[in-house]
Length: 276
Ligand SMILES: Cc1cc2nc3c(=O)[nH]c(=O)nc-3n(C[C@H](O)[C@H](O)[C@H](O)COP(=O)(O)O)c2cc1C
Image 1 (tube, protein in one colour):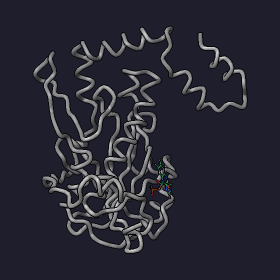
Image 2: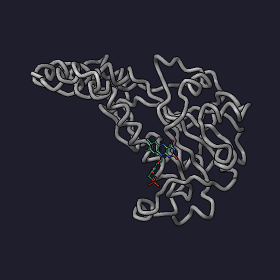
Image 3: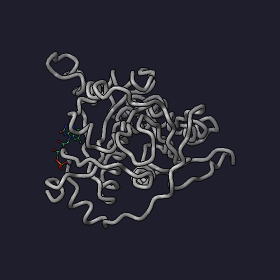
Image 4: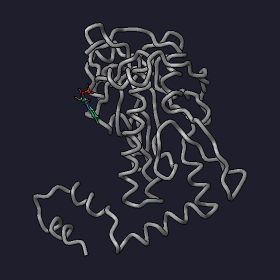
């Protein structure tokens, strides 16, 4: 039995989040159901198909295919010991190559394998792990300052390593309101990455536990973006306090299906931030 859950639901002061966490644990009563569902995904054609097709594409929009990443200038030891949040950025225009280094290097598909059930089904792998190989998150780039590309909002496609144009950023005040980022950051940072989650992709397989897995995936991708950016001389700031409703609206997302989870600001650290 699960006596702790009974205590939680009868205690009004306990936060709903705690109840959620307890109810998503695996117990003798629910573990068989859980694994039955997991097994369906691993052993059926429909299951394989759903795993392989957990990604978004904007089919009717202009695509910019990014160049192959170049090798980072800093090794992993230095990257790990030097990474700190940056809150002061120096204005600079990011090159398409540098943008590609960050996006392809941290999020781009690294390997593809073929399903054992059908040659037509291809599974993809990225630099970060995801529960069951189902990538439940999407990445959008708010390009603020670039030497070549048009400023605006893009969607990043890991498989084809391209940016798809969504819309221009017309109003910086609107962006400030939605992100809550100070104007100094919006003016000096090069780009902001928005991470969204399409929960149904993992919830269909892992039920309530899938919600946890999707948030874990956001964290794994976040750290990868921070470290890859650092390895190319850029600084990052993870920014959790934004207004997801406004951000979702800006992108025209159906929030019952996909919603903003996290922002990462990327730019050139100001001199006083370089060796903190
Ligand atoms: C999920 C998450 C959300 C965060 N949100 C904010 C934020 O809204 N504003 C901010 O200034 N820093 C934010 N941070 C950055 C943390 O304050 C920072 O990582 C922490 O102070 C440790 O410092 P360091 O990153 O330099 O090691 C966030 C970090 C994480 C992981």
